[in-house]
Image 1 (tube, rainbow, N blue to C red):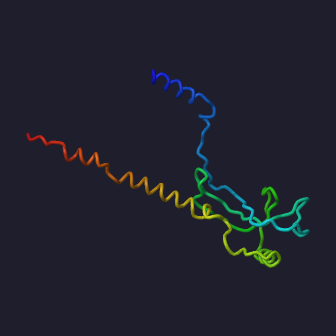
Image 2: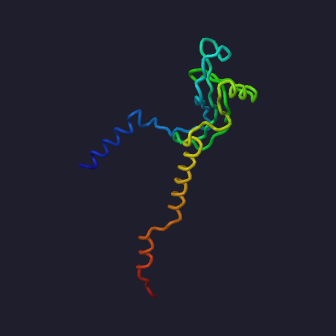
Image 3: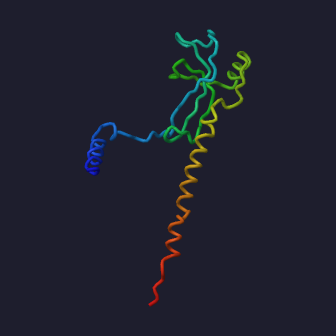
Length: 151
């Protein structure tokens, strides 16, 4: 009876649309912009009807929402939704630093984005390698206790 119930549940899961669509989310690369500082409303920073804010643009490589590598990191001016951004030159960055009293010399991303994902990948790969090269104690005991037959 248990086998029949298990078979019916498994058949229902296979036939549902949500189960069959499952994909592993992969980013190779994904363009992302994080808000660094909400700048005061200034006419020089007005684009259309909205004002621009300071953001940090980067390309993220990762699997299952865990970042593995970041590239193309730079400060940008972005609109409120983050759909449009404008590159900044070094002169413009220094002007923003002095005008709004900012320190833009460091990377503003969180520990998770910079290093956290790499640590998780290293631990997972370490466990996989350890699992491949370590022997089970049961296998060692079976090899030692099997009697040898003399011919």
